[in-house]
Length: 105
Image (cartoon, rainbow, N blue to C red; front, side, top):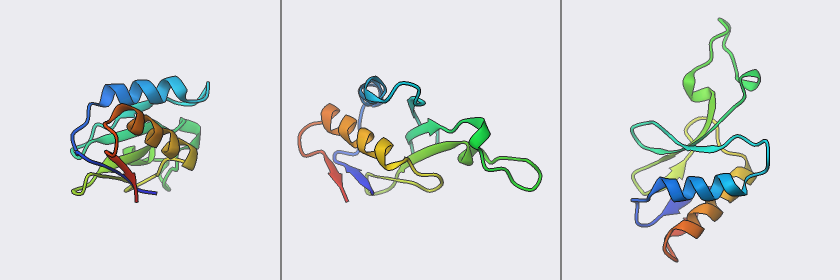
């Protein structure tokens, strides 16, 4: 599932607040992704990290992430959100942005 946002500029905090107030108790919170492209992230518990043969885990494999691409779409270059997390993010974006601004592709 790909979520596209029109216009491409959003305020993160209302989306984070909506998502985090509607997620199930015990689920990790949605955060702003601190990468050049921007986007959203959800931490993966350390015991679930995929480790390489040296016991090392790449930082991008410690989180579920959706990044903005050049078309204003949220795409998953590494570990995607679960379907449930993706739908709640979509719901949060629809709630926080003007009507018609959010499309599932």
